[in-house]
Length: 224
Image (tube, rainbow, N blue to C red; front, side, top):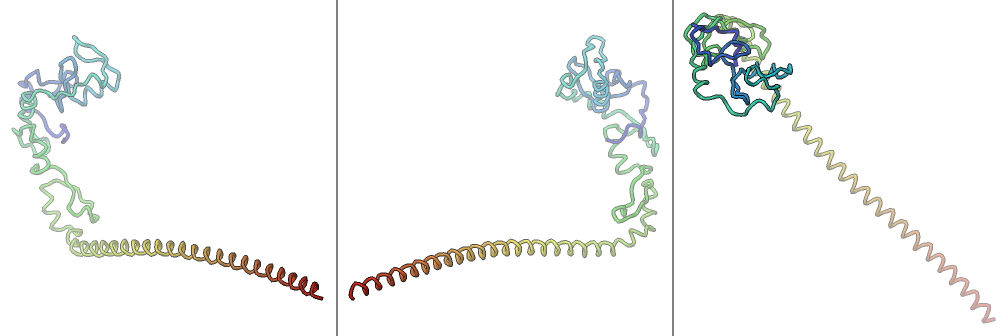
């Protein structure tokens, strides 16, 4: 919501007292209903709640807390009456604007509302009123350079995509290499197991040869 400091009420004295906040003494902004049935500006009652205050209603005077705020919205009639209050824009002095559409007035048509240059995203620091905006954009160096800058941004974007794709490919290759290393490790482990088994068999064969030699010698001695 646009700051209420940008507008003033026309014929403020004629505004219905039921639309006036007891805390700020101004027409409700974002009204909220509390448990005792009274209505206040949301910011006003939340600020009082943060200060440990009691309900401004003399008939209530309950200590304010988050539980004291009701989830029920204010009556539609109240909101409608607030939206139809007439205000004057303090920026461009346009009058008889319904408060409910004041934000739209400021954002789209107020000639004195200060806005950024469209070239802000590429470095322009200009910040001025809307009625000076068109004249500025005609001479803005950044806007004149925008076609070139857009091309450069596109090139950088494409390069970034290429880098991301290359990074993804490298990550995939890295994962494949790690898998291959695991497989090589498994093969090496199997080879070592086979070597150990082969060495064990050879040792057994050697032992058998020695036993056979001993047996032959014994047979030879007995045959003499």
